[in-house]
Image (tube, rainbow, N blue to C red; front, side, top):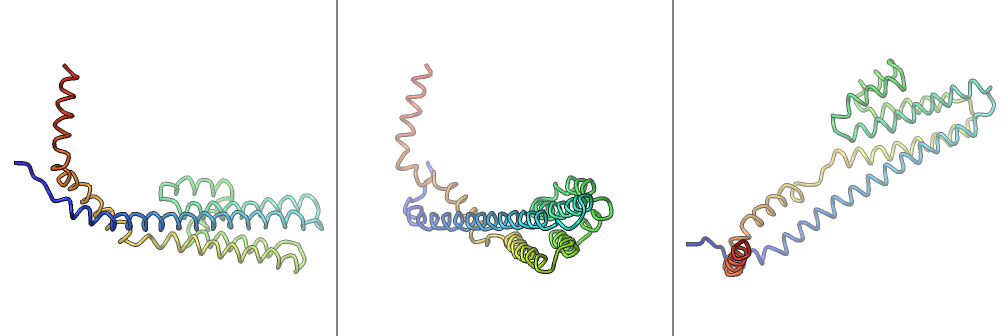
Length: 208
């Protein structure tokens, strides 16, 4: 006796399963696109801060200018690296801490590592550094606009990271698909049983 199932329930469930898979794929892709755009904004505004500071720091001597730009580049790097580590898994922790200590020094690295939210702490450090730059007020305001936009982009990344795709699109869809695929051969047995027997006989003849 061969166990089989009627094919009608699988036929009726196929459109619903297809829609669930489409919704899940669209939701995942939309999140990927949004965070990719947000990360691009973070990089763009960081580059803008460095570009503006390189152009506007002309009223100080070359040695001081080099030190100020080096410190600013370190703050920008810390922001990008902190955000990347924040959005990655815990396996990045040791490497991240080592890179911070090499790039920023023990004191600055410890302050950033012990912060409740590392990207926001790195953004605050960058804000303090920009505010201390020896530039006029109008130019400092222009640079602060990039800081504000950086904060908006960080909030977008944080929102996507903290809000996963709903379970109806992930876990329930996976369970539904697993059951559907597991039981589908039983529904196809009556239709394809003869073909399976023919294939087995053909394979046996070929192996002789």
